[in-house]
Amino acid sequence: MRDDTEPHDFRARARDSFARQAAMRTIGAELTRVEQGTVEIELPFDAKLTQQHGLLHAGIISAALDAAGTYAAYSVIDPDASLLTIEFKVNLLSPGRGERFLFRGEVTKPGTTIIVSDGRAYAIRHDGPAKLIASMTATMMVVRGREGIEG
Image (cartoon, rainbow, N blue to C red):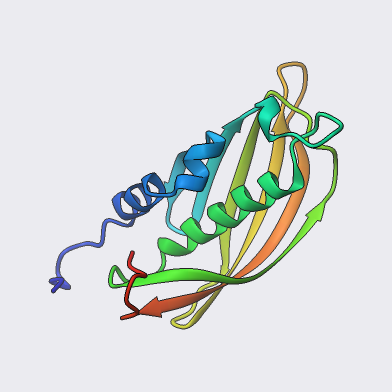
């Protein structure tokens, strides 16, 4: 049982959980920033993750934005809880063309049962500024005491 006088190390918890995500490991995603209510994930371009036009696939963009929003939410829940995404909406705003991609998730509305986060995806190229390529709003359910679903 956790001693409430000890600070909750949400950064270590998020990093440990992210390291167990086979999907993020498979696509080469890296957790690069973990702050209270904000997380950033970065992904290098890889031709294996593209659709037929050579652009980063919408499914990859969606998965990385979902992870960013969920790990942002991890920073605002107690250490005995976990999260499951129950809904999200993605707006694909521009083609996924870049050398690297940045996915930023931010908690919009914290809660004890439901948390809402917003995400933004950016394409990064060496010859110009980062370009917004997608946005997401996601809803997560806080889960406690469910077998097989732990922080």
